[in-house]
Amino acid sequence: MTNSRDTRPPFAAVRKVLNRHDPEGLLAMGAPADEYEPEAEDFAGLLREGQSITRAVVIDVWGRWFGDTYFVRAGTDKIDTLAADLDALR
Image 1: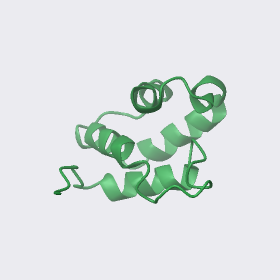
Image 2: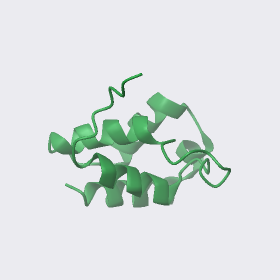
Image 3: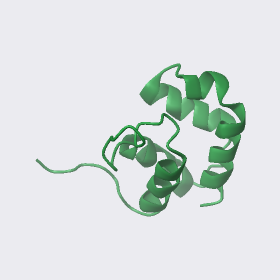
């Protein structure tokens, strides 16, 4: 099976940020290190296009992949911090 994921830069840096934040706590529960790769691909694509990563962008991308999770509903400060860390990769 071939991986059709777009792993061009800044994909690895985005995945590292997402794994460090572990927004859903999945890595802490033993999920594999590639758990957030679909989201990383989305964020990396936006960054390659020069788009700012804001709280609204994080909520949009996260909602597409995870739906209305606790992270989205209650994590305002966490969302802002994640957005800032991702935006710093621009």
